[in-house]
Image (tube, rainbow, N blue to C red):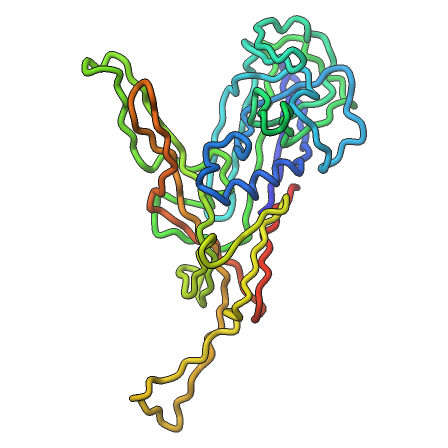
Amino acid sequence: MKIKNDLIRIQINNKKYDFHNMIMFEYLRRFANAQLSEQNINKISFNKNLRYCLLKFDTPFENLTQNSTIHNQDFDIGLLTMTNSKQEMNNKKITVEYQYNNFNQIYDESTQQVTEDITPYLERKITAIGFNNQVISDEAFENKFPVCAILDTSNYDIYLSTFEDFVITRRDIISSDAEFYSPSSLVTGPAHLAPLGTPQIIDQPNIYEDNAHTSWKAFYDNGYGILYSIGFSSYPDYIDKEFVIGTDISISSSGDFLASSIFRNELEGQLIYPELNLYPSLGNYPLKNNYKYVILKYKIWQMVHSGTYEEVISTPTDTGLFYYEALPLNKIGNLRLFLNYEGG
């Protein structure tokens, strides 16, 4: 899987500045971890939706690399509301675009307070722009939340002179080399790579406060791909030999890649012997079953809500839909499988 930042456009009045930003190691880590457990589908710490834009003024970052750990608090302000986002997905890639220009409310990272006053930041040079999904810091990171992507603008004279005509547009392309297959037309691509997930699959009724239906809570939850099993087959659209994660095999995350080992010599195939009451002729021999693909099976999970108006219960739910990602297999014997996540 590869994440490519296709465009960062800064538009100030009639001027446009086009860039490509740096994808941080933190963002790759989130893609790797998010597909490992259905319990993570709504946890902010694994969210891939870059809905939060941060601005740093005056002082540039020093020695910035992909492995740098930069937090929200290293910026000055964040835009609380993303203006717009859209996503297109097919069997090989996902294109997602975000737009940020809502300065009606900003989050001051130094005071950790919401403010509507943008004037202290006008006429100041923007030295870096960050992208994340989290507004307020998460206690799991000791009040610091790593940023997913950064654009260094310190070499350009870009100022926040007026927020009314200041727009930032971000476009990312996330691609996969695997062959995709799903029996459902509702799953159009590798949902585990989609920052915005899939459209809601399980319809959810409103939960009303009273019988008069004067107040209610409505729900719309996207679906997300969670890795269920690793299998082997001679074809990319079905699994002949399957190993369920957590039952038959284990899988671990080491930053920007997933790893799993299968030490059962299953890739050597199996000799096919006739039953004792069958007698093959001299021209018939048992054949060795050589698998051509390793197949990753993903199930689509979605949060479903129940309970009462006062106490809503949110439950990760298997939608019953699934898809395969098939990779060509060019070795036999024990398998050490690595799924790499790269930024470009």
